[in-house]
Length: 137
Image (cartoon, rainbow, N blue to C red; front, side, top):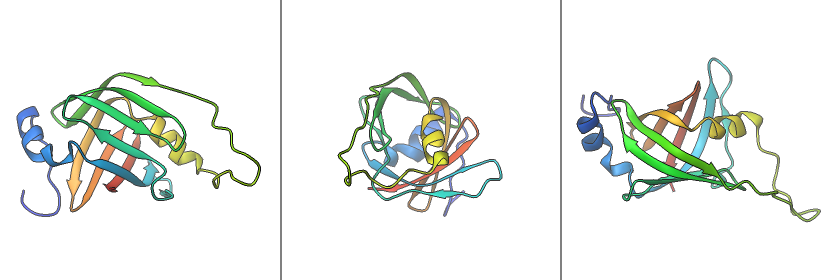
């Protein structure tokens, strides 16, 4: 299919079609979950980066999850994910606005098998019941 969206049909086709997503800092813009109203994300707080060396970094506004990634039939697989969880303390008056729980749950659901699709300039990924849209950052 040419144009707005590419459907992934095989690991080699996946790598060919989605090679432009590698090495880019993707910024989360929206999260939805099975029929629920989509949550809009504060720009810049949540990012996803697939590095050319096969490493992945997912930043949730406070903590970073790192691991490995590889192409699959429908997108990519995240392996060996580890979250460097820390207490994200803020001084009074400096805390960022609260994050929508759907955004927190959606980014936490990024593990294992992830379906990926380019739709115009957006990277759309689905994982464990959540759909996340990322824009180039």
